[in-house]
Image (cartoon, rainbow, N blue to C red; front, side):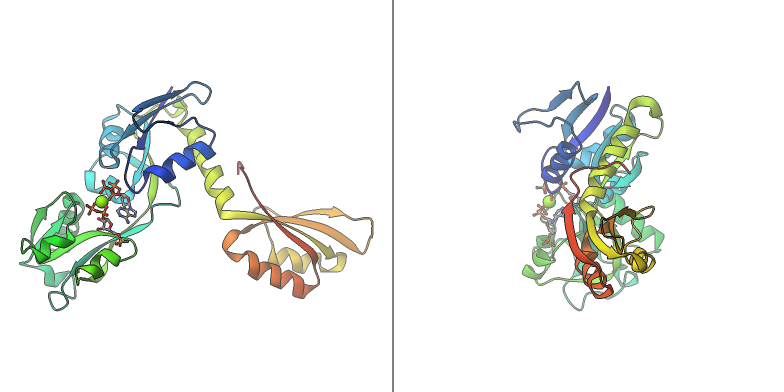
Length: 281
Ligand SMILES: Nc1ncnc2c1ncn2[C@@H]1O[C@H](COP(=O)(O)OP(=O)(O)OP(=O)(O)O)[C@@H](O)[C@H]1O
Ligand SMILES: O=P(O)(O)OC[C@H]1O[C@H](OP(=O)(O)OP(=O)(O)O)[C@H](O)[C@@H]1O
Ligand SMILES: [Mg+2]
């Protein structure tokens, strides 16, 4: 049975549970449940702290898991990223009071507070910047106000927390993170992780694309195909009126309205959009 580590709380927990549920797995109903066995799905879910997930997966006691890319890299675990899951997006950045530093090089000699010391020490070393890293568990923005650090390195999503403390980001992002599926590199490939990957990819794709159906004048099929190439190629079906055909293609959700406008301008009509509930690509 495939052993999967799932975030038990924090920013990634709800979305990870939603995704596993959409992928057809049984998830916990009660937050007090720590392990859930899904016999039909052939998996055992272990609810763990997101920070610990890469450690368990790297050690091989658990085959794979869902965590943040930043947490994976911070842990130094040998677990590898299998795929990005399209939620929990954030950047990992340096920030300080305006006037403290504007580049990574200017961090030299300062104290940097973070709850991701592995990530930050490596980044500073890669850039040849000598600085003291102060390891804190959370609320690192306050470290500057309280005088234990001059610079922080932390997760930034909206930037509201930084602004509330009078801090501003500087330098390039250390990392762009999102939730990822990770696996133990030595795990037996026949243990079901490929089925999990395909199911999760199905959820990501179903969320990323919509299905577009429309009627198209038969002499405009080539031009319509350029607008909606689909994944392989659009489906074209005959209509009773030989001057028209029905066309069907998957379209990235974010370009739905632009594509509909282009098709309408071309002469397509009866343009319909539907959500994709699930898919295997
Ligand atoms: N606004 C956010 N705050 C914190 N982490 C976020 C945010 N948005 C996305 N994430 C991602 O969530 C993961 C951190 O989750 P984790 O549960 O460890 O911390 P948390 O959400 O801050 O929870 P807590 O601090 O309450 O334990 C990281 O991968 C991080 O990039
Ligand atoms: O850019 P924003 O949208 O403001 O989000 C980022 C903030 O949210 C998280 O803190 P959290 O609330 O989890 O508290 P913590 O620092 O104690 O973990 C994170 O550590 C940042 O402080
Ligand atoms: Mg937090």
